[in-house]
Length: 586
Image 1 (cartoon, rainbow, N blue to C red):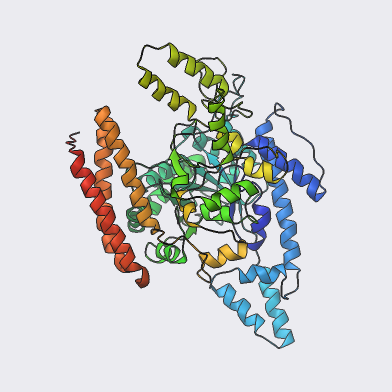
Image 2: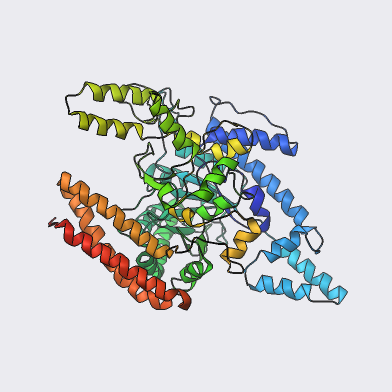
């Protein structure tokens, strides 16, 4: 959900027991929002400057502590509210899905005897718990030098500072690690006492790993276990059918991946527990650490209907699901400025593109009509490509300067375009290379625009919207109650007619990705790319078999459309492979 969209979402949902994730990338934004919230809630604010000692970690700690304090006050007020129509305590329980707690609430509401009703209400109040305030750290964003080229102090790289800020805070939540493995960060995590369970197995601070397949969970889980760390949740995310950066392209599909987790999770948990217990012995912690609860297996990426949610929970046995892009249509939960909200409502499949705009060099889902993209194109037309780079979190290129530059910055693009102009190559080659340079967009600043614009911090912000392809099928906005009712199947939000099932959309996206790799291979006969194509093809072929078997578990009224679409996609895939005439031998 980028840096700005959910920066203060805990204040909107945590009191109702709903978890949310706050990005730790942009500490400048975090400090700006802390200042605004302190003013709004009448709290004392002491600024932490950009170059103050340990500024990044301290900013994060101060902000999380503020959120935690405000949420605790919200929950206290909610607990003391009357059980009457329109009250927040009634809303808390009526947002719940079918469950023992919801059933107990319904019984209380139907009880007329005063004393019994009051006793039941007391029991219900005791059950109210705030949703956790989780944080996200992108492991790949871990600079060792600042934008001036100055080396950070020990343990003060971007990711390590963010972790320290989280660990020093009072929040009870998870650190969600995304974008792959960072051994230095993992090792640093083991230096904090709060990362280890107490004698009862309780963890104040927990670890959530975002993974795209079972192997990634096993490899990263082992790295954690060797350090004595417990992974509390493996969050399986579709590699391509997601928002923001996409780490797919190998044909690994959610259905087969979740089936492997279901088949192997007992073995996974046993392996990691044994390794963790051995690590505790070496660390002298075996007597003070109790075995924590087994990890939760959750899934996210492209969810759009209650039936899809039910399929993941019942057929694949996941412990929870995540909905991302759908919440961009819920402005009382996320920050999204009016202009961006209007554009995302009008977006079609063609308006949401897996683009090369990220300076990280990873494919990035982007709303092409966003203010950020429009501004990028306008700068090119005006002959001044590139951003001013006001924050520099992605400044990592030192080709032209000692101090690193972001490849989306004007300073870098001006130098790179001059270099291309001076090379001996054809006009067509130069044009192609120039396009590759100018397609990079300022995302670390513009992804904050949803918040800075909506909050009046930067009313001229050019917001970048990193919605996933699923956003093209939602047609109107709703509120928290509406999206919750949609997720639990109590109501149905209008979705674009013909919206493909989430599994089949992901399948199509992977075939499109493979098609592009095949075209690249014909121009560059590399063994590495050949291996990638071969693996992707095999994974997709297994996926077709899996989804053919899955069809019987699809809700009956949707089954025929699912099978027909699957057959159409398979025909397209077969024709593509046949026409490519590839002979891959690796």
